[in-house]
Image (spheres, rainbow, N blue to C red):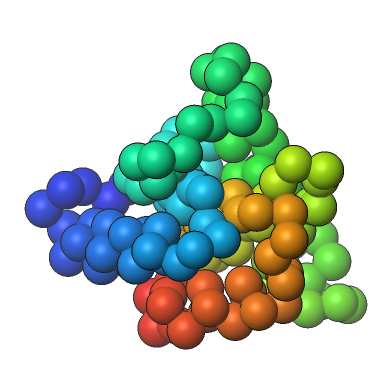
Length: 128
C-alpha cells in the first residue's frame, strides 16, 4: 500500500494533477486492488455524472479487478488499458501490475482514446 510519505505517492499525485490539466479529462485517480480511491479525483469545476457513491465504489472495484486479471497474458500479452465509450463519458483504466494499482480516467466523449492513452503513457511513463 502506498502511504503519503512514500515517494511514489508524490509522483502519482503530481501525475494525476498533470493529467487533470488536460482539457478533455474529467477525472484521474489511482485506485487500489480493493477499488478504493487512493488519490486523485475530479477536476474542481466538474460535477460528477454519477452521484451515487455506492455505485461509483462498485465501479472502481470492478475496474480494479478487471485490470489486474492475467489469464490471457501468455497468449495475448498483458493489458495496456481498458476503454469504454459511453454516450456521456469515456472511461479508461490503466493497470500498474507491479504496484497493483490502477489509474482510472474519465474524459469527454469526444476524446480520441488512442491519443489519450499516449498522453497517459507520456505522463506516467516510467512509473509502474
